[in-house]
Length: 390
Image (cartoon, rainbow, N blue to C red; front, side, top):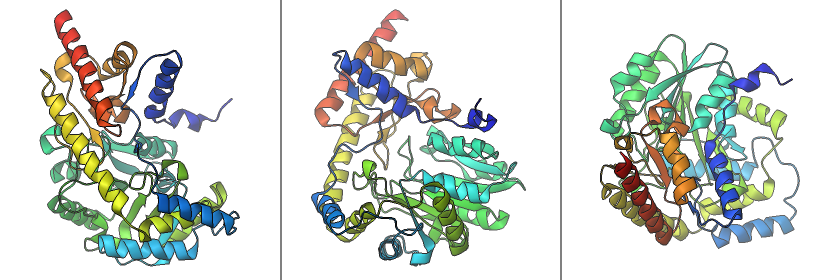
């Protein structure tokens, strides 16, 4: 018999849809994959070469739970330059992927009954971990009319004496929304006034199409109450390498490192060496990837908006489009299933990201332009068929 807490643990449905799509491919079906949030580019060669060099140099053993000191120094220097946030190695904890930097800090901070405000629609692991820990998950609706942001008064109304943590994600999964400077200033003022933590998920910080990425951690009073989450899965196409990190106050960093000692011991040392090379080496591959994502964004958004009854805002970051499909009069989950089963397009229902995702789909444009055009044609056929029946 499983422990009762397991009933409170959710999942990430992108992997479930991927498994269904792979099963259909095994039957000979042609499937266009728009479901998984994974760049379709190779890890840059200089990073791979550095990993091989590290393996041959003996980086195949345990390292410190918080990460190799030299790697943590490289990360601290990068964050100081890139975000303008004063940080040292002791503020940094290296973890195997981004998810531990959601789970560990929330485990360290949230007691049963504490409230955690999180974006909805949003990355499903936020709500899953809050519930698993016995916290109270408080959804912050992201509205299309706010360009998938929110009004600061919406947040103010959700804050209570039990509010312990606010989770932010900008650029945002699944909508591609980006929080602007004025809103970040207002959120920071509320965090200081009401004395709560902010977990700022900035995993898409380098995949931004207009302007420059802004971090709430740089606002007055926020360095001591912010956990900055970042990593290499998206920026450097290193999803399988499992490299993430957090930057936070030293006291919390010590607690997060202790949790890592108990759970995974450490992040693979050769991966850490390769990750340091990613930050210090040439950035040409990142620039080229973002340029291609921008071209794909425009292709997909323009194509979606050309379909009768479908509307889609132009995302400002990440690599997702979040079209409004409510005019079809079908539940988003049914559209997801029918697109895959009948038309060979694997996408995700907006409700995979929370109840406020109803009426939307998430299209990951981490696929080549030829396949994106094919997916748009198939989606247009699906929409035409639905309208013909109705």
